[in-house]
Amino acid sequence: MKFLILLFLSLFIFFLPASIMAEINSLRSFDELFPLLAESRKKEAFSDEGTIRSVKKNESLEFLPAPASGIDLYGTVMRTNPAYLAESLLVIPYQGKVFTRLDAYNALGKISDLKGRLYHSHTRNADVALFQEAVRLENEKSGKAVPDPVSARELPNTEAVFIRLKDVNFGNTYYRTDMSVTPFGLTYKITNTKNITYLLFTVLREEKFSSILYIEPLTDGMLIYSMAGADASDFISSMIDIPSAISKRLLVFLSWIKDGLKTVND
Image (cartoon, rainbow, N blue to C red; front, top):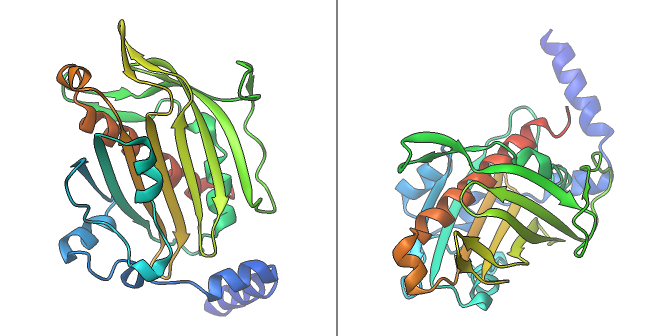
């Protein structure tokens, strides 16, 4: 039996496309990217939910990667001049298969799987579905929903997708997602394209929420490093716990990608 398993793995590796083999052979390590991260934070990053931290505008970040890594999420998020930030790290261990950038791209394509994902609401003291609906839209101006695509066989260099998420607190919310390939991974940026409202109040104006996820296959597992920012007024912040709102939504996106990777080849 052991011989048959080794034979299967050898054949699997032999028939992998050259581009995927090159990607696997050039994997970096977590410690290479985050050499100064506290050991306690690293342990949390390798846990089921990863580690997440809310940050006010003038506070220092903990999860910044090494300058030589070529990764900079902070500069992109700061273009919205956010009053509140959240940063997170999650490493998903490999389970018999090294994930690739193509796997990550296909996981990100399953927009409908965002529907019904739970978060714990302290005010309701219950687990609640954050998004009651999650659909991909035909284009920026159309409200017509289109199905998620089948898994791709090739990784595009860039892609923009418009989505509608029916948020349990904010109703219908609209976003543009931008995927782009980097030398070692890929980035996935999410920006609101319409005002986000609560009751009669505008919580976040158009393009005042920005979240960017960086995904890279490492020797240790699949890295998801993310940062989110929101520019909300003091008045709105007195009504809504903005740091908590950002963190909960970021955690839902992380669980979505994590589950998507596990089923991407099913």
